[in-house]
Image (cartoon, rainbow, N blue to C red):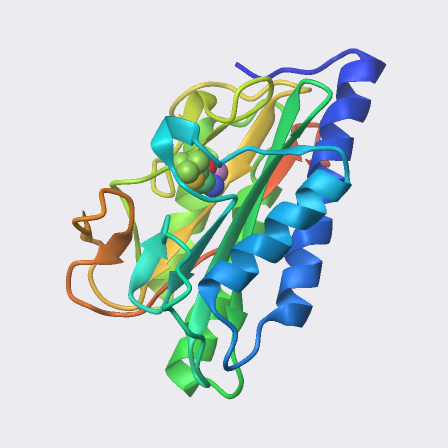
Amino acid sequence: MGIVTLKRDIAAVRESCRIVRKVLAELAQFIQPGVTTAEINALGRDIIRAEGAVPSFLNYNGYPAAVCVSINREVVHGIPSADRVMKDGDIVGIDVGAYKNGYHGDAADTIMVGSVSPEARRLVEVTYEARNLGIAAAVQGNSVGDIGHAVQSYVEANGFSVVHQLVGHGIGKKLHEKPQVPNYGKAGKGMKLSNGLLLAIEPMVNAGAAKVRFLKDGWTVVTDDGSLSAHAENTIMVNGSDPEILTA
Ligand code: MF3
Ligand code: CO
């Protein structure tokens, strides 16, 4: 479980998370029609290294890149490729992890490329708001289930579905630590949240059905029904009633 209490450790995780946010901000500026997903990965990787950090995802369980890039029906863990070109109207999930001074940071955004359909825009906006609501529930004394309940109820009230087969997670010295943080749940259920707990809260929201499947590359997760999907993630630290969004 990633729980930080020492000033030194909190400073370290803040630094890794600052780098992650810097990468996401620069990638959001860079992405436009004509850019390849390999170029997105290369830029992200180079910024992480220039900051003296290590890309958390590269070689993690054999994942071959520093940035996951997932377009439209792809939910998460898309593999960058020189053959994959962004086009007007795409929504593109970019997921970045950085490791420095013993701690990981992990965050993701979904970028709208050029002018997207009203439905795609609504999906992305609902996903960001679901992330905000999940984070707002991550207060001391609440339970892991309160986070999932906040995410799920908002998403479903908006006519979309949350992915059940993949979850958010604790984070810290390792990229994935306990507890699992589902994007569904019952209020008051599951592990109690205590101060200093580090969580990666990451709603994955489908425009259609919740079911997802893996492509033959072994990584790319896609919606089973081919509908659009969006993903938004932040690393946070539980801090009384005021969670610190480390990757803000
Ligand atoms: N944010 C994703 C996660 O927490 C990124 C992992 S990609 C991987 O699962 F390659 F590292 F697996
Ligand atoms: Co994550």
